[in-house]
Length: 187
Image 1: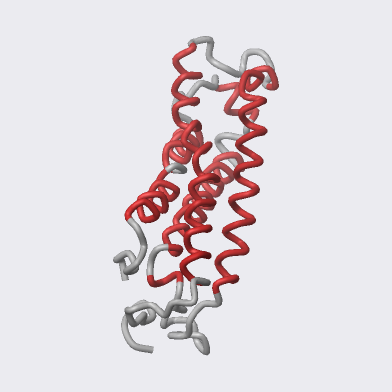
Image 2: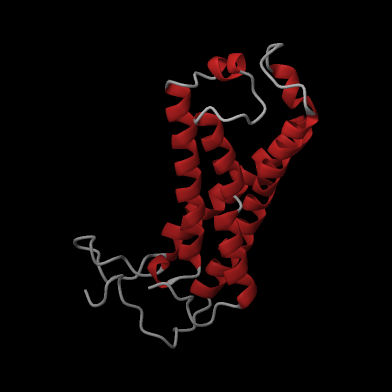
């Protein structure tokens, strides 16, 4: 259940785990912001984002969604990415069609790479779009925010290489030397 599939090289397993982890720093930063902790915005700045209030729910939801999507990358190197779990009626124990994982993963990688390129070109202008008095003057906050968001630049490329490996492995025509079972044992 939690083991990497046989035939998955170490680099692919590490890339999948890295892809699942690169969203953690930005998620923690957003959660801190949602809790009203000092992450570079003044009380006025937090109020502009609706924190506390709907903005808190938004940043918490965004953090949970990004973590969940990043976690799915592990399915490209784990058994649960090839066999439907036992709790899905009618599908449990059946092999997942490769394109059911490849197409969304490839689309996600393309979108993430595009967003990363856009983010890189706009990073120097990040503070110019917020009203005066909403950000703290200390450059420490900018450094912390950059350190928390910079790992996201790797999410798209990591997802792309793991997706390509998954596609090559699933379409190689070789039958795996292992027996996959749905999560939780036999169907």
